[in-house]
Length: 531
Ligand SMILES: Nc1ncnc2c1ncn2[C@@H]1O[C@H](COP(=O)(O)OP(=O)(O)OP(=O)(O)O)[C@@H](O)[C@H]1O
Image (cartoon, rainbow, N blue to C red; front, side, top):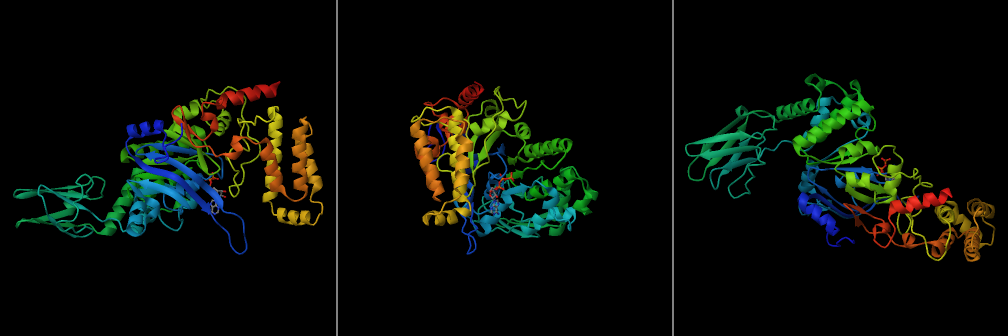
């Protein structure tokens, strides 16, 4: 099923969306490239996030997994406005937050937060814990207390202390979200203070001048500094530390306690959405469980939405409602945790799960080990980004070859591509143009090492010889292209769109009904290898 280009959603996904309500965030075709080109360096940009689309629904936890360097942190930072995207949109309540500036950008910054992997590095050791948690409050001039007046059609509000003045006709804050609500009843008034503020009813003095349209004067007796201090203390105790910890320094704490401080700081401005970047990876297993429990409690209490970045799939399985699997800058599979673990739709997901004993995955074949390393994000392959390592790659019908021979041909192409990217290739091309021999032995060795044990049909052998000759002439890229033309398949030419597979979405052609599925293909190839 092809996604609807207008929404990026497949029909299956849209139904899911209806059940979950409006997304908190809709990410569409997001790209974040790090361009380090200067007069000294001409290397192409790092495509850290390269065309990501997904929705985040209120109150859910999305686990984001994938090997080191695939772009998880960059994606998280871009969602929070900490990295500027190269293109694409991130929509929250109808507004593209990548376009915000000034006060609107600051407002967005208040709604989101981040917890970092290494609390040792992310906390300033020269500040006390109290100062660390107060810092975002100070940076955002917190608080500005909003006042809602109920019981009359129109009222003016005047304030002293951190109270927002509002003249009649300004938009009325919703009593549900206002900090202070004054219910003007005949001959009196009732005042309520929003529960989470470090304020009591007794800290607020209200008088109502009821001549015609009422004027409500609100005075908050606590100073801004007191309110900040009290808010920081409340957060510090809420995350499981105690009041005497407020004046201590991060180095006086254990790793778990430091992570609690990081969480308190991230919660300071009452965000809706937190990116948790490997929040427990640096901690001992017993401490991990306690921090995860804390995160779950806070989510339920404050209605938080999490993007939980992790290497450890068993942690993700425990905490996430949905899992997004990232490979080389893109989300290659996303779906409910149970479906992704129970029936992985993308070959990369299957390879990750096959590596964890007891993952609960029904995969009972051998561990699926991937060949080589991921391609450089500066030069991702054309077509499917996973094609260079894919154990379920669709093969060209031009030749009938054993899977091991196809793999050897793919590897040879990776060798030529890697050489083409290397610093030597310009020199090699110059040498080639002058008719000098380029690294001819290295090319012959690579061909021999990879294909020496395979017998190729004469037509295939001719193509390999041509490619080797191109490489020896310094044209490594041409050599790689020649192999791709002859031996490549759809996977080398076209980038797959997301298709619905069961409850999940996968960027793999094998999700289309014309192809054999991922697990059957890999199982059959493993059996073929055994023979
Ligand atoms: N500030 C930067 N400037 C240039 N390149 C960067 C920068 N930050 C990250 N990268 C590169 O972008 C790619 C994605 O990095 P990122 O840290 O987002 O991946 P990751 O999946 O979070 O990795 P890890 O699991 O190791 O934290 C990597 O190739 C990385 O080297």
